[in-house]
Length: 248
Image (cartoon, rainbow, N blue to C red; front, side, top):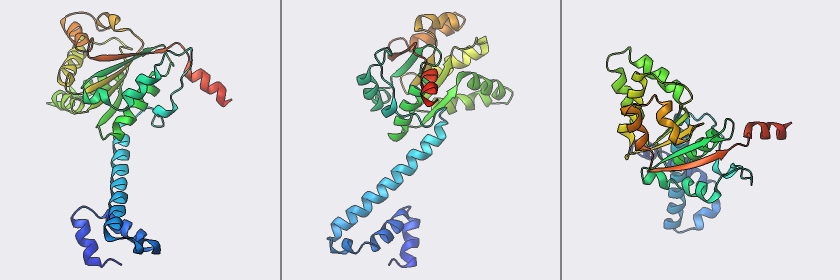
């Protein structure tokens, strides 16, 4: 049984989780037959797992995923769906984050782009990468609001530039103003080659410049993601329709 003073010191050192782990061991008489090193190893493994799980759950909550239950292990593969399982599994290791590469998920409405993005984003959280999901229309509304505040635009840029993985859903779904385009360009400038961005879009990359309104900002933004990017086609299969019919 740990003394209260010992518990206090453990909490002060930031390892209060050892208290619960030790108390759990106290309830297992077989533990006492183990050498001290083995018992301490079990304690450390238990505390490490608890800290790891807590951090992952904090990152997942902070990511604000549209589909928080999405998981790479549940991705639906079908002969009529052009998904490369080996590539998805490779990306799930977060190799693209380590290489500061990005991902474009392109396909028809309801073809599962958001699900894939959230599933990959969750894997990034499990690797302790700071991740954020946001719809581009919501991002631009936030930008418009921050522009009304002195220094608001700069703070917003710093905020979204720091995410190691940023998921931009509904990319190019709506037209953008010149002011909004300049914001998106500046954000891409701060993130490019330092972080990873996942785009969910209806449009092929060769349509991006036109959708952005053409011009130097549009061309420069698109050029940043033309080469150092994985392109994944989600296809035409309507996943929402398929799985709603299964439920019925």
